[in-house]
Amino acid sequence: MDPLLMFQSIVTGFLLGGILTVMTLGLDVIAGVLGLVNVAQGEFLMFAMYAAFFLDRLFNVPIFAMFGIVPLLYLFLSIPLYLGVYRIMVGKPASSQLIYTSSLSLALQNAALVLFLSDPRQLYNPYRAEAFDIGPIQLNKALLIAFILAAVTSIIVFYFLYRTERGSVIRAAINNRQLISLLGIDPHRVYLQAFCLGIVLSAVGGVLLSIYYPVSPTVGATYNLFMWVSLVLGGIGTIRGCLAGGLITGVLLNFSAVILPVNFRNLIVLIIFMITIAVRPEGLFRK
Amino acid sequence: MMFKLIQSIIRENIFQVVTVIILLILPLIVNQTYIHHVLTICWIYAIAAIGWNVCYGYAGLLSFGHTAFFGIGAYLTVMLIRAIGLTPWVGIFLASILTAAFGMGIAWVTARTRGVYFTLCTQAIPPVFFVIFTWRVGWWGEFAGGSYGLTVPYRGHDPIFMQFNYPLPYYYIAFGFLILSIWIVIRLIKSKFGYYLRAIGEEQDAASSLGINILRTRILGMGISTLITGISGAVYVNFLHIIDPYEAFGFTLNLQFILAGMLGGVGTIIGPVFGALLLVPFSEFVKLFLEQRFGYGLIGAHFVLYGIVLMFVTALMPRGLYPKVKETLIKKGLIRRR
Image 1: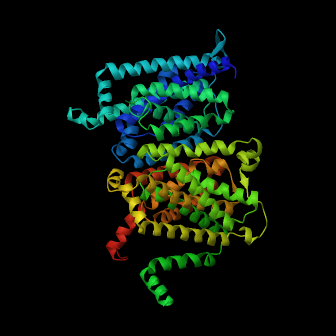
Image 2: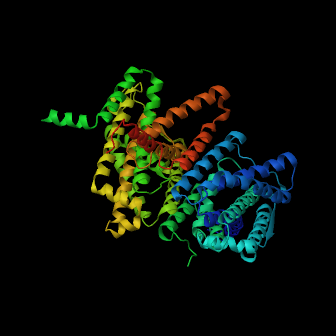
Image 3: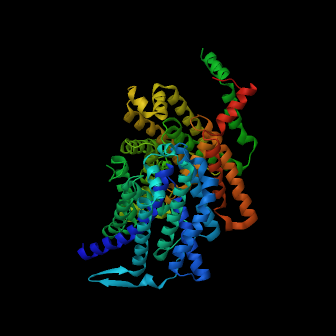
């Protein structure tokens, strides 16, 4: 094995991991605050990718504008979505929540199939074929842009969660959901805020992915799996763990694609996922 | 003596016996191939849903990976036919026992996980098998058929190899295996082990403190659950004569079992059958309706409907339709409570 190739794959995986981190943060905030593993998160991501694609194809919106438009759209949509669909599932048994959200995911995935057909679509952008040469390794421009935007988003989210009052309420809710109502905080308000944050982050993740990756109705399921892997590696309800989980998953995905036949790349990640759940269900970084 | 015993069994279970007799005569009265086909599929889904229900309804372990056991049961049956020419009459049992052994292995791996973690872990099983069964390299590619799947070698009308020219015999085969599965579940829940299983379904820690061996119970419970699901896959492939990885290890089939189980009644014996009887004809009707109205453009539309129905069922009656109907019938005095 060529060491240069391995290094290259690790660096590329790191860039993918940055995007995965943003996606996982959204899932993690919802799982932590609402106590609900949202299986349909991948489908929201997929719709955000389609939104980015159609904004580009129909209105020629530049990528940096999309980065604002799609999350804003999702912010407005997430409030009725929470009130109409998700609120009844808060506090229900985990099995009901899982069946509920996975059937929502089935409905959304097939709605996308009916609406957009099954052809993979790719947003046009000139950066996909260009790369920076840094010494012996190359960084794809599109992936690098996505990574930088993901890093900016993560910094904003971390600032929000660790430095603002509303953010610390959300972190308090992750720590102990019952206790926040004793502090005189309306829990449903916090749930709504956390849900909106999670959905907006899925929109950001979708836009970032669509910069480099093609979209088809089934991508939601694939990214769902990757998100869970990074969520479980980091530990459900640990915000800092997400950061590490996403990066590790990204690196693993790319690294195993280099050392194994291409269609085995998911296998390694899945097996690591299963072993992690079986051995350390609380995540690698929870004390 | 024997006659009296049979008489007393019939008298105690008059409702069940009449239902079985009606279902045995029904395909002879309604002699339409299409109806036979739909009902056969219905029984096969019912078997799978019963298997899933043993896991979720009794042991409280929500599995999103039961389609993998369905697929493995189906694949093993075809492989046995193709590799050593074993007749499906034996192959179905052998394949389901192998599936159960595999399911027990999975239960051993996931023994420490609970709740969401168990579900996430089982959700990862079908994609793993999808990767393995679409791998088309060397002898394995020949043996497992890659992404084209495997077909049962065609033999014409050959009852020894479970191949018939018309679907009526398959109806009886599937119905027989359905009765077998129901019998297994009845024996299970009436045994001591069944009480253990339901105890860990209610509250695992409490069950453990009473001295129930959690690991052993979970492994055996999962074994029975996957045995039944494996039977369903094996019957399915002998009926349709083809299995491919997209169907066997995809997510949609899995949700159909869950929908059948949820719709019918979680933790009841007959509930999943009830659910499958509602689900399969309904979905066939919707598919036909959409095709006639809109052509093939709306190919995924019935799944949208599935998803929405399942959401409503989960939100409004998480224990399913059958317990509600039963409660109403008891109130009206039509059946007795046991």
